Image 1 (cartoon, rainbow, N blue to C red):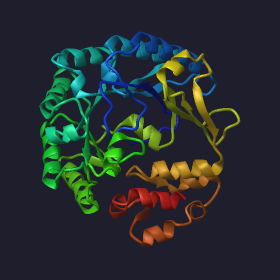
Image 2: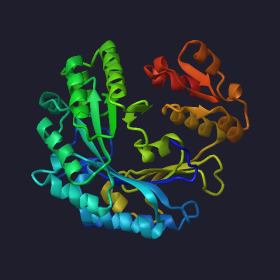
Image 3: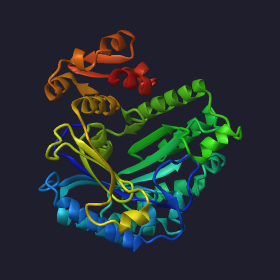
Length: 392
């Protein structure tokens, strides 16, 4: 996982879904009809304007990620148009990783044909939001596909020529057992076609339907000990299958890590396009510690806004914010953070930058070895609180 400070990710947000999952707090909207052509044209307009800004000029995209929402609802022609425009205005690196998220329930009976069209459009990595192969749990999670349809979609991607296939699974779902979770893991790994697996403990985000159900007593949160056992189970199973645990929630075969997401965690630049998309650059004039922003969330308002007026939030970071973000994001990956990089970038020694590090090392939650700091195996199980304490 060699680092490249000049890497540039492009994130393209496609915000529509067939239904809104009850646990989801992403910027997505349930609709079976949406203005695909108008939205695509707006993406091309925003891209053309952005490419003229000094921080993006002369840089090629090393990764492109179509996220959502449900990108597989868009036609392959729309995806191809966006990729052609990125190549025209920025350029695509020869080995550019181009990912699209997909919902198995949107492929219907023509899975191979639709996935082949996406492959021909330029997508070379597909990430399926499977979440579970258990129909009962899929119903709890509000998914529109069945376990059988998920298996069909994954196999169809392989048949369509995708060599890089990722699958998302969720654990600690109300009513889920450890045995059931292990069956989901086994089902995913036994296919033999996945090079990447993302697993997330279910979180109850404010304002979501599932959080409302929890507060109303309609469902129960999974026990902490059960959730920990599930996390240990995925770590053990993936290790046995030859997948490396390269980030808190992500596992991959060597060399098949998500380049785009690594860019986020390593705090490299990314250009966000679309309604609600976020972006970050360390190359804006007058913002040596970085600048971040977020676009207008509502698609109709975002499409109606002119170039240069699509953002609703912008922030110029100071040194303290940049240091905190470097720690919060960098410690998510197994490689951790180079001490020399912190000292050089922020002009302070490690003990000053991370005053709680020594105690966390003594407590067995952090490692400091070979010039790097990282989470220990025990620290991984308490990652959010450990990283927050170190970066506070």
